[in-house]
Length: 134
Image (tube, rainbow, N blue to C red; front, side, top):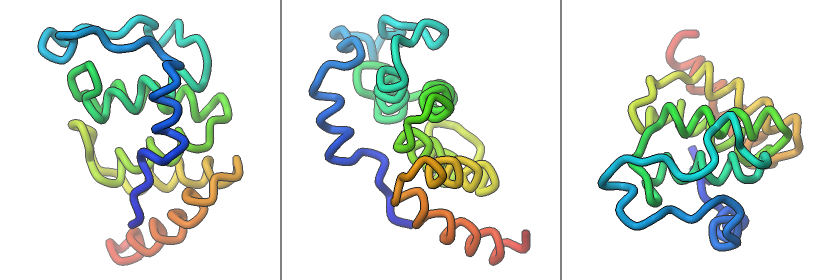
């Protein structure tokens, strides 16, 4: 599957400082960046934090937190966050249990929001599930 977890737009998002910058030493101490999930300022900020949790940018990698932030952004209409959450499930990243069914759910949502990479990945996920006997 074509992995588009961090796109050019995502790189620009990270550089824009949309979400709080990680503080030096956060990765070692495992502290949470400012802006807890329940207080995520915007869908874009939630997506940014989700990406940070899966890439380890200033925080310890935690797939479950990444999916939580990305899900919130996806539910708020950020199609690229849906695609990123799908890849976490498809690739079992950050300690998340692999689930093509969950990945397909997120790709379908991203596609319905107009994200072309998500649309392309829907068919790939169906193929993977068919080969696995689902």
